[in-house]
Every structure is written in structure tokens, then in C-alpha cells.
Image 1 (cartoon, rainbow, N blue to C red):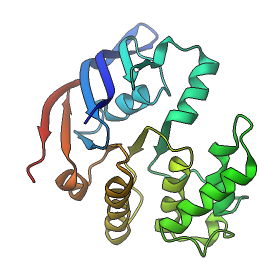
Image 2 (image 1 turned 135 degrees about the vertical axis):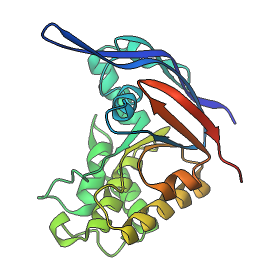
Image 3 (image 1 turned 120 degrees about the vertical axis):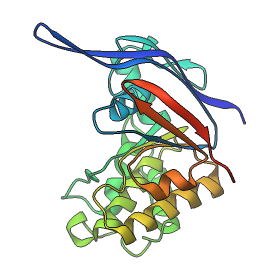
Image 4 (image 1 turned 60 degrees about the vertical axis):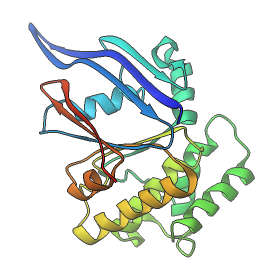
Length: 230
């Protein structure tokens, strides 16, 4: 499989007054297209920071992020926003769906940015929601959906632009055991059907067990980078 992501000596330091906090201390990471990679480690070790840098939500203090060979941080902020919307899908612990919009409308939002054809976006969003078992819930608003359904809508939203990479930060952290397992089965199914690449930050042992690779962070560095035994 070809490499979709490569980070080189990725560092992030936060400055608060006279104090500097070095969160990431030189992360070298490569992810192949079609992989499910899980990132684990104790709270505060830099997992979410790493995900935010990979996704271009924050800029590193030093180091590079290459996605399909594109140097993410060589882009200006406006161009980076366009690249991020087109190339990367995001799923967070909380679904962040807009309450006034239906499931279908929420999924369409990333696709409607930058002047895309509304009919094409609607067709794509409808297709994804149908594939993940929510074809009968298109017109329902988030308050009318269960927690598991809301997070499925968030996954559909992340996929609507056919991203090269999906980044998920504790996607099951707000779900019960049954819905957590159902969401991860969905991720596995999407990976199998579409060879979609996922990088997932999680404490969920089921996800770590079924991922193709598990990366453990400790003190801002990669402690272990283990390929799963199948």
C-alpha cells in the first residue's frame, strides 16, 4: 500500500506567559492508504494535539506533515482551510451537529462549502446515510436521534467529500458499550468496503484490538508502533 501520511520531526510547544510546555517532541510517523491506525496513551500525552496537527487544525512549532506528498503547512491559512475541507474528514467525541438542521442537511454542510453543486452533494449525503443505516432518518434533527445515530451522522458528514484521510478523536467516548461497538463495526465496514484510511485516538480496547496498527505515545514521543497480529 502507498503512503498517505508522513510526519517528520513533528514538535509542538505551547507558551503560557514565561512557561513553555513541550507537548510533542519529534513525531516521525507514516500511515499507508487503507490502514486503520489507533493512537493510545494516557491523558495529556499529546494524542489529540497530534491529531490536530495532522488535520491542519493547528500548526506545529516545527516539523512537517505530508498528505499524499502535499506539504500541509506550506499552505496559507485560506488555502489550508480549503485543503482540510477537501482532503480530511473529522469525527470528534461530541458529534457537533447543528441542532436546527436535519441529519441530511448536517451531512451536506462540508460538501456545500466552496460553491459545490447542491444536487450532487445531496445525492452523495443521501447515499452515505443510507449505507450506514440511516436512510429513514434523513429528515430528523439531532434531538430526534439517539446518541449512536447522532455519531453515525457525524461519521457520514466526515465522509461526504470523499476525504483521503478520516481523523477520529475519541469517537466512542460519549457512547455506551453497545453503541461504541456498533460505531466501531461501522468504521471497520467502511474501511473494508472503501479502503478508507482512519487514524483514531481512543481509550477503547475494542478499537485497539481490531486496528491494523497501534501507536502508543508517552511523554510526547512514540513509545511503541505495533502492527497488529492477524
